[in-house]
Length: 103
Image (cartoon, rainbow, N blue to C red):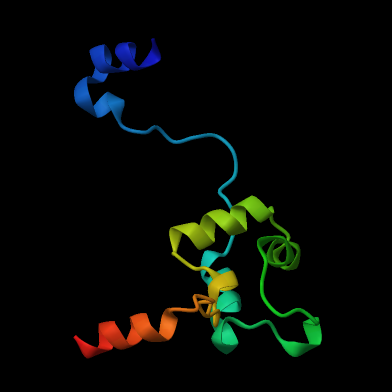
């Protein structure tokens, strides 16, 4: 019950997050985001890939793919969804579309 002792000794201030041991993380989030979004989110042609994946980006930055995925989630970046469009295969699409547009 470490937090109870800290509260008894220091009050509410004792419950604040204490400095943690170890080195600071060295992930340059802004560089990763810039690399992801440059060129409209498409990788450079010489890389030979059509879209970014967390694993490919992780390899380029020397970090884990889960770190890349976490950063992308935090910044709401979805490189897999850039320029995707799904057209309906519904045979009634034209009729439905005319009904909606006609409103």
